Amino acid sequence: MTDTSSDARVLVINSGSSSLKFQLLAPSDGTVDAAGIVERVGQDQGTASITAGERESDVTGPVPDHVEAMRIVQQLFEDVDLALSEDRIRAVGHRVVQGGARYAEPVLIDDQVRWDIHDLGKLAPLHNYAAVEGIDGAKQLLPNVPHIAVFDTAFFTSLPEAAANYALNREIATEYKVRRYGAHGTSHQYVSATVSELLAAQGRDVEGLRQIVLHLGNGASASAVRGDRAVETSMGLTPLEGLVMGTRTGDIDPTIYFHLHRRAGIGPAEIDDILNKRSGMMGMCGMSDFRDITAAVEAGDEAATLATDIYVHRLRKYLGSYTFVLGGLDVLTFTAGIGENVPMVRERLLTGLEELGIELDPAANAARSAEPRVISTPDSRVLVMIVPTNEELSIAQQAAAVAREGA
Image 1 (tube, rainbow, N blue to C red):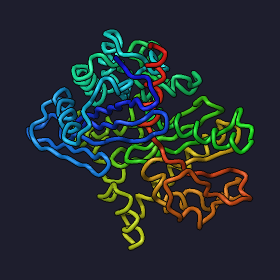
Image 2: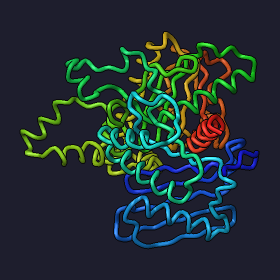
Image 3: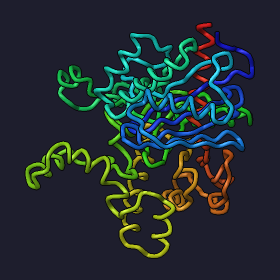
């Protein structure tokens, strides 16, 4: 029996290709009871850890799959005296990367939904198959609690057809489901909604608010949002398209694939590895952590400087094009690890845009804070903000809402 009282919790599960992150939290206020990760799933020797206030625990051992990873999660909770109790957990929220065009909302996971998630693994093989294993493992541990799938692509199912479709042969695109699905949708939805709520609380009319959200982490994406609906996003059929990322190329001439195959004799699997894991900032300067990159740029490292220039140039292209898509810009928001914590990127992106209505406050940009904040000057026509993302809280709130509807 599931508890629906105010102190009930949601267990959020994020099953990655070789990891399983988890968090137990209150959907009402975001209070986190415990959080942790199981790493090196699928390898002979994995590691797992949990933090619950002052209590911590970690284990090492084989983690053959995500089902076993969930058993390890149960052990970790017991280690810190927080047994996974069905009478206290309202729901289990599962992050699912790819929901295709089928799922625009979070949904209770039944046999059909599980099958669909697995079937959509054709579009996200590194993530959806792992999500199914995580779902199976969590259902074995908590069989009487509602399990909810929250899709990373859901926010972008509302994209206008002109934005969602490629100029590809129509029959081929339809048969093989080739279209723009996007990614990081849970983050973009959470951040854009948070901005609207903050401005509405100040008495501002947010109907039709024109926002650009830059989710800049090791994976990076941009979105254009009008009101509460996304109208454009940078990631496409897969997360490879769009901005320069930690190890991904982002936008690239598709003919480069054939060039590498024909001229260099590189096979498809290795090309895929090069584009997704050996390019981006890592491929250009040997670093993907912007703390290291910032230090290298300040020290005059030419490779790091050029890589950063390329990174910022791509951001400017998207900022400009999305402003035109929206017909103007009211708010520009940075989020995720780089967006929230690397002043250099924000400064390089926005310096010199005063005639376009963007005036950055250098002192505010350099300040550190874990709270949402404005980093533009009072005279800036475009409001520039930093809003820390909280995908776990968003997943927990969406899962709790579905659980209440089904109670």
